[in-house]
Length: 100
Image (cartoon, rainbow, N blue to C red; front, side, top):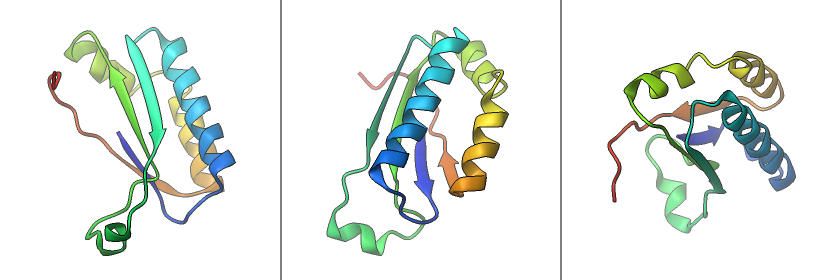
């Protein structure tokens, strides 16, 4: 998942968002692992045609059913609504088979 906040937010708030998201998905029992990192900004980001990521989140799930269930996990709507109210953002999903 690529998370792109509409406007830059302080690193401490991005860390808090990522922490809350990771706690939510870990607690759901739907994911095998989750990892999140800040986007590393470079000058080329100024020319991004769509959006510049704020962070990257990788969820590892057992199968397609688990992946589908992550979109309806309890607490997700509340977390999204709360953070969207504070700092609007977009989430771009890239669902794929394991890369390695």
